[in-house]
Image (cartoon, rainbow, N blue to C red; front, side, top):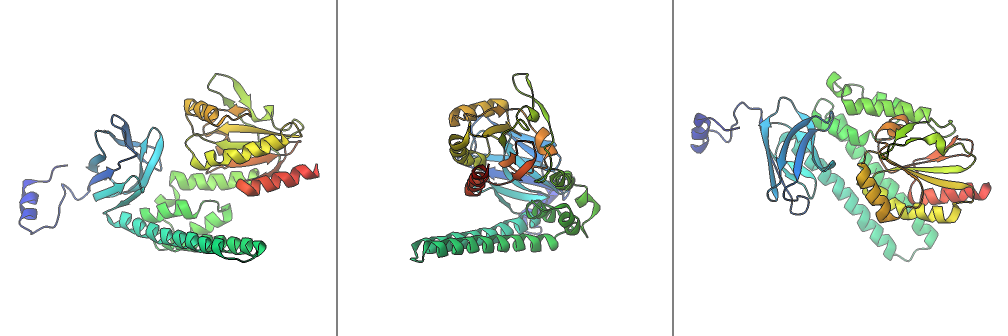
Length: 360
């Protein structure tokens, strides 16, 4: 949007600090030396509704989006379906560092930038304390207990930081952005309590409603419940059901993942350990690729040399049914199809599988 001649003259004269066409114009300047490839089309989309707002073709290390903000909204910049920054679209000049995934320059984005800086400080203190623990000469058991205590204390500080920011901003888009982080994993009663005092537009957010739906579905697919079947049409046109694998007399570990998900990829070596240890001994692993392009899924399967069956092109079908809001998400099903546990990763997952398989 071009400013009017009068606006330009007044600004040059120092009478106005800045001005835009109608007070609701925005300019987003996003930069990165590593994440932009010449010729790629970068999308600006509404984070809540996935509505496409604008697009820019990369010519150098800087992207510029300009327009009129009809309302404040959370938006994302994405490349090849991968979100590389999430921030708040509001009137004014917004600068986005795509490498750091941070935005600032406008009131609500500055609030979020400040919150992130405080969170980064807490995390940095955690790593400093962790390094000091590693250098100490305390007994192994005491060191493990101290490490667990440090992790719990850090999580508590981060949760409290986000909770306070949300409580103080229930009436604006920054509050919604914080809520989507703070409320992750809360059960239905906790979500109901947190949403008290929020305006109607807040509660009607697609993502807030998805959190509520997810909480209800989590209750319906909790440990002890019988599995809920789903059907997927894979990229090669085959119809595959969860019941093709689950409830057939074996423990079945189902990994919901995507090729673009870093934590999912980091989980694969641990899953391979479990596979090598127990495959053919009463346990099987099945991968379900969600929210992913089938071509990317196949490339990841080949790259990681995954030896277990993969159901690709599942998209949101299973995650909606099982209330899964983030991946990787792993569910263990008993031989009869009942859910044994869900949500464990890393060492916790391997220990739980060892415990389970030892008892059978």
